[in-house]
Length: 437
Image (tube, rainbow, N blue to C red; front, side, top):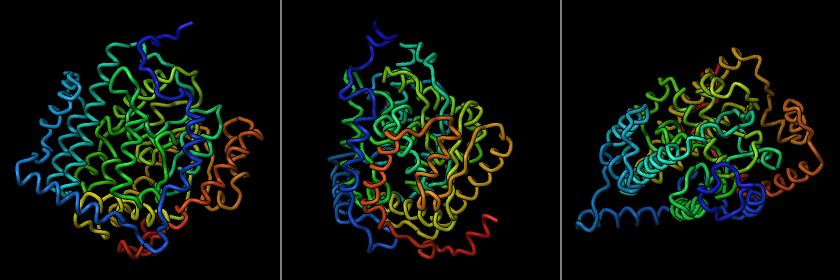
């Protein structure tokens, strides 16, 4: 019997169920990253490649062989609509205001290099093109809005607090669903053939060429479980942009927004990914640190959600977050300021902590469990049993064996050589602890 809508779903280039692809991807992650043990706060080790790319781009622009990528919002929209040959971006929703603020901040605040400008232009056009494709798909298939979703499991925590480990442990359970990286980066195929996994593989290859040290900070693969940052990109919203570029005006804009429309689109994207998979609804493990900042809107959108709340010492979390952001900004900016990054991401961490605490206190009826980073290091099996007890699921021996295999692989990864310090970012333990008091 043909599933509803399956006749017009793109042909997949891989298995519909991500579990086998996840296991294969995770088996190789430990061998993809360089050893960063000598780097206190890693900037890209591909500095020479970055400089060469900047020089070639500048020469091409100066000679007229290529034009300087525009960050004008109207030009970005025009480029996206031309790419997909669609007028689906004519709606003037909140995304359009977000785009205007982001584009202005990129020009005025970000200090982009030639490579950074090229990446920013390409990223935004790609997000807008995917937005247009989604709008067209939703018009053709209104039944996507009726796609059932099971009660999600939200891994809630700061950047660098162990949320990725928790998400990937839960993803070892085939009874649960998760977002694969290629689905986050490319929620919808570009045509009749499902090219999303291939596009993600090529994108990761280019990213590792230009910034090989990032693989040690956050190892991943095209089919690996990963956060839904790409869903927010479709709405031109959130920390996926803030962590790459110095755009404080955009950050303050997003912090002041009422984000319910963003999460309405987020839910629609989940339905779209589920529809494209053609698989039965399973509890979906979601993981996005931005959700701490937006928790009231998240719980209003997913009133049946369960929360797995991760905690880690604030000084370690802030230092590691700042290190990740410096790594990202150094790729696209000639002169990133570590002290500004330290102040900005301390602000973000404190804001998220306060908002999430208030939202959780107001939603005591929501099933939730607290998990501390150090307890996971000490006894991850015991902590996962506590998580499963909250979820009302048995932690089977087969799932626990899969989890143990993941933990063993992850322990061999150079991620464990990622070193960072507060003083590199102009911060002190006393200052960070006082900010959270």
